[in-house]
Image 1 (cartoon, rainbow, N blue to C red):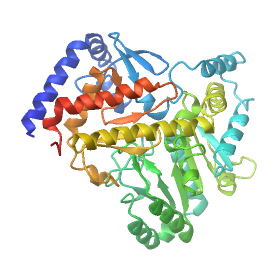
Image 2 (image 1 turned 30 degrees about the vertical axis):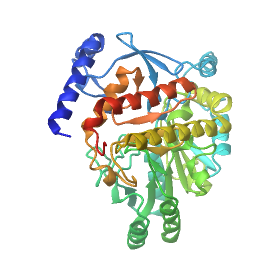
Image 3 (image 1 turned 120 degrees about the vertical axis):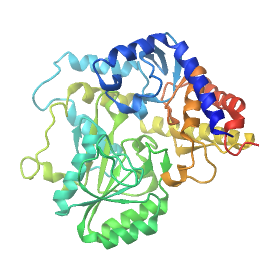
Image 4 (image 1 turned 90 degrees about the horizontal axis):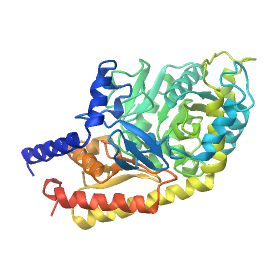
Length: 434
């Protein structure tokens, strides 16, 4: 394998992509006049230019040039219902009949709050926000005030929203809280550092499976160590389940048997609308009770009727606990097929993850943290992305794969076949190939 050969293969992929997508290219160049990089959401950009998506139906997408794709990214986990679920559309339309912005408590928010509390038993009370980012910011704010402390433990590779991202240290856009960044899946270091800084620590914020950094599951001993250590030093354990709450009937933490003090939610629970929520122990959430509490929590659209209606319809009619479990099982079966294929073909490629979320990595051995992914050549991820597009599969440039309810078995078969053809075409460039 040579760098020149990978560069040559990638240049060819760029050229074929550019020639096949003139309308998307034109759209990109026009929009770049008004938005930096024609972009308002950095994750959606990729070179040489991103596709412009014109239409979605079920689990299918069409771009501006008329190409059809099976959707295997599903709005980065928010699109579990697909693009045109009639149950969602009807709920939103009905809600709009009585007015959109009602400037008061409405008839819809209470029933969604009750439904979420019943579904995720660690959430005794909650508050709505507009995104998972806001939910995490408010959960941390609650922890700071509840404990009277300032330090927040987070983990390398963690992503908790647009202003809460971490590599070995906080990213440049991360809010300037007092963070202590520890290695993920290292129970011993976590115990030692939490004990050392215990009197300063307000919260331990963690994803039970790191999503954005590559679908890296947290080991049970690591997560249990965080629960035990947080309890011992009087800090609050905050589980970010914005992504992982969809991985089991009642969320991933519940499946693992670990009860957090606070939990943050987002993505799919809003039925495709902007959504976030944070909640947990009633004594902590009492800080936000206007009758007795000390913290204000604002947000014009927190309880907007569109999200409240879509979220309730989605959780009751489509993504029930039983449906969540079934989708997770489909994902486990798909990932097992893919990993068996990689082993059979003798390449250092694997799919990590849990349930209906997974990520492709060009590396052998167990992946326990972002450090294990350091050897991965990012150009191989790009080659895979453009190969999948050429096979009619829309996914993420970083190899992230998300299943949605309307995906058919034939779509999954198509994805597995596309991975097989990718290995066949680029075998000489892949690590560990024999």
